[in-house]
Length: 149
Image (cartoon, rainbow, N blue to C red; front, side, top):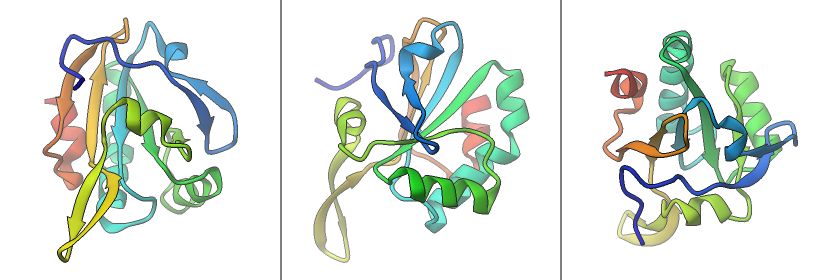
């Protein structure tokens, strides 16, 4: 059951980098950039997070809340946020509930070796929690521009 534009985004409950509970439904009434990335503090993920950080004001002016999701834990997220001064929350999906619900936890391969991991994907959600866009071909250095286009 793949997710499509127009579908209701699956709700979830998890914790942010500070251990605070976060539910997607808490953001009803706001547009959301829900971006899934493989790993804190790796080159591509850092470029993507910094693109969103550098354009955060523009994203907010466009009405968006930004939520980053990976399977890293809160402590890893705290270090990543502090190191790059990220102004938005990163959600810890250590039990893979969210990445499974959004079908971004898939088989990947590197150097001919297969492994499971997050396929970098961004879902744009409207104020009612419906998916308005799914971005799968992500330009990590210009990701905010892809969202704001």
